[in-house]
Length: 371
Image (tube, helix red, strand yellow):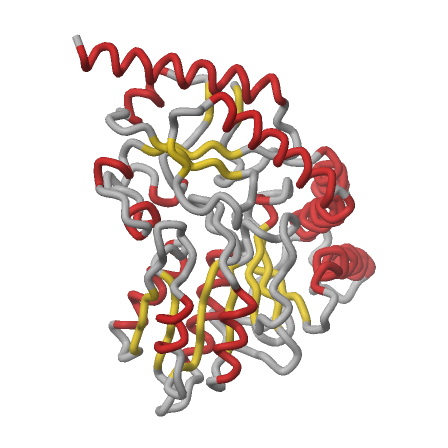
């Protein structure tokens, strides 16, 4: 299998696996217990927390969650639940991940005013529209750093500045950006996930700026910073910590590697159209289309090449990608698009072999349609 779906998840780094194994086999204490095994488990958790929080470098605290979906729900719902009567407005972007948009949709049924900002053909938010929407009734602005479907990098710091000027908080979903691009220094809350950086699934984190404490989403013990309830899994924390340490040690080599893969992939796909911005983009994401392509047939024919027609969370919904329709693509164009994602462990030979097969299968479709 050639794996080109790095936006959905990443292979577990050997270093992360090695950090996890002892905690699965012998060192299985509850990190919230006071005895020796519990204290040892807690020490593992705190070392991991420091490793993951190190790249933030601008204060604050990091609290573990079950993943980025929980972190985003916590940040948004917790902030809006505490918003005063005169600040019952949430501003977000049309291309956000479902964990943000669906949360906003639910909040809209609870009396919250929700404004969803448009993006241009490049996938970048309309800053004039943002400036007009973010006012003194706004409690929170929520924006993704790197889009999970098209890889576009949003101007997060500019949005944070607008939010703060209006007296609002700024939340950033940095799941696809953490370990890959600089984090927004002006954010108040940032959600991240382990399995997008070669760590284990089932764990994420919410970073909070000093003085920021969204209301709890879960109740029943408040083990994490007095705000989040539930027993932590030290083996997951350790895997996350090892993956984070490696991601920032390899920040430049990983970036250069995916940039080279991007250039090679583009050279092999001269007639395909790139969806979204090219310059302002993480190069590990190549979302492309070929008009008239039957993506379902393509994926069925190439079962030993793992790529995507959109985000994993929306797979099987039958709906065209909300991200691609937001940038102005027709339903037909959106359904003719594929996402190729590559990263640290992808080789040039794999990219070449996979794209050669994708192009050949697409050519056959075109020939059959013309026959």
